[in-house]
Length: 336
Ligand code: ISE
Image (tube, rainbow, N blue to C red; front, side, top):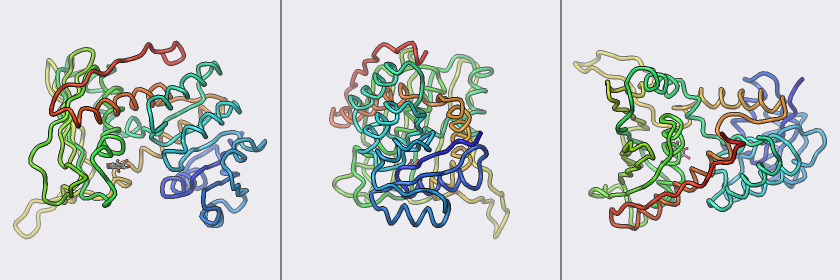
């Protein structure tokens, strides 16, 4: 059976996912496209999915009888309404991060899915599908002993002018928030943010860099440097320190050169390239589960927990280095 998919939001990642579904992955076909700019949807259709029907409204795409599953790739503020509509229609739904822009919004999605009684939602936390993180998790689970600490860094070469201090959490650190819950099989109990000397490459509305310290229920302390004007490249670092040893996230494959009296290799600059393979794997996983009428991978509960943690981190940004408590609600059986 070929899964008939509708894509809402045909900008950067929506276009890229349409390409994946049409040209790379097996078992799915894009039959419907929608965007707040119908011309943009039409252009993506013409390039990548000439048979897809163009809808002016995402709600109509979700309701269409020939759409089996939905990809929500529109702007974050619209996610909640589309995901709720997909659940109401009983259709599997892949939603890019964030699941919702508030923890309350993410909770409404969890409640709707629990009431439906079966998983339908996968959240686009693609790092869980990255070969490097999968290998790191296996090393932590089997070799390094109980994890005690994690040292991490999330560096972007530069960000657009409209990127402001809380976005370092919602837009950037959210990936670490999700992937470390999964890597450690743990939940967070507190967050603290401190600000080192600011880089002169930033501006008044963006305090950069910042260091977030998360403590987990099992007592693991995770320190992450977020530095989004680091200039030199897109660089994701992670070291887990366990009772028996340490394990590092592997560097992306790169040719090492001896040239001009220098030992060197390239560092990527574009985040879309850094995790390109994991997007393929996560969507193939979605196709497999959606074809069976359900969802797998990062769940609405994971999206909700990420939103709760983001809120605590943003509160901590204004707390002068004080710890902000994170309260974890009881996990419904659907997500156990
Ligand atoms: C972007 O949305 C991402 O997902 C990237 O992984 C992150 O590094 C970047 O800061 C975000 O803006």
